[in-house]
Length: 218
Image (tube, rainbow, N blue to C red; front, top):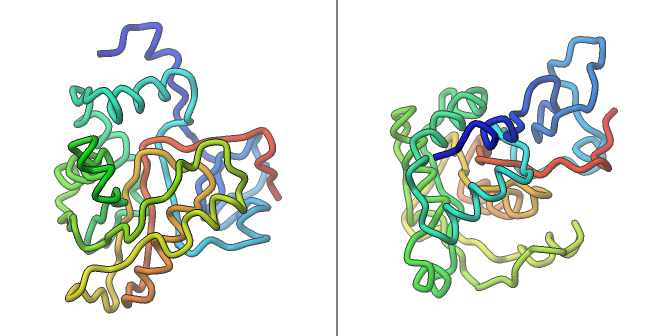
């Protein structure tokens, strides 16, 4: 559990934010923010429709994620699900399925669990939206994304995912769930495959998202 100092160190994401990727604007715009997009989404629209996260990926949230992801710390999983449900309300409304971002089978074997699937289960409990693990597959192992540029991340994720046979998504609203949203490369690579399978709407809900000083706004 978090002590008082750690709770104070959590940075929750508040409006105004980009209507597409959910990155918070560093200051109030002074205008109605509905539909307002950041410069990056205007320049290169993502393959997904909308993304939201409750927490900025910072010192305290990083320790939460690493403890959960690599240390098996699951005591806050229901709290994570509640935060994600609240922050992702616009992404979850009317959704048909929750799909966790998959691990490659070798990494899953080594880690013994997929942290994104655990978050998906927690979100499913909060919302009643059914989770479908195993519908989206990672078809090849990819090197770590850490330290890679935006372009390198996109290239790293190209062709990394596929839809399992027999799972059509015609006209469905699918919610992708992951632990951290960094550049959106993983979410876009997954969304590309989901759209090819017929998904009409692909939204993304993560526990945290990276916010950089260089995330320009317009």
